[in-house]
Image (tube, rainbow, N blue to C red):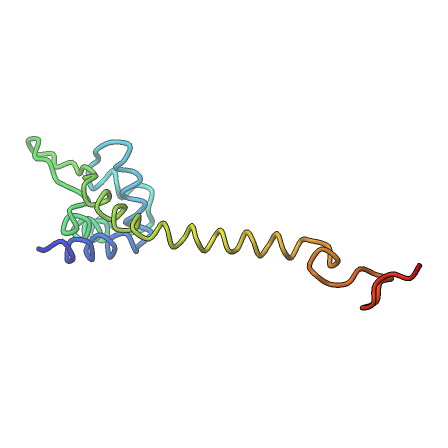
Length: 127
């Protein structure tokens, strides 16, 4: 699988709230399929399908400890996705800066926005 396909698989896996919840649980430590299924109102086979998607994306690995096969989170694909998103930070920051400036402008009193103050005409004040 090339880098683009890995990134696609990562974002596909992260698109589902159940899979994100599984990753959040695994971030606290390894767990079996049964342990991962506990908080969900879906079957163990459904959890296993979610795990297969996470495994294909390399977000989860399976350890073999005798009869036990605990799942573990793998950080590398998350770091790759974060790195890809980070390339767009400058765009986000510029948009937020423009939005902040617009909000500041909208919160200014009308007289400070370049409009004539109340009581003053175009010809200025009268003495």
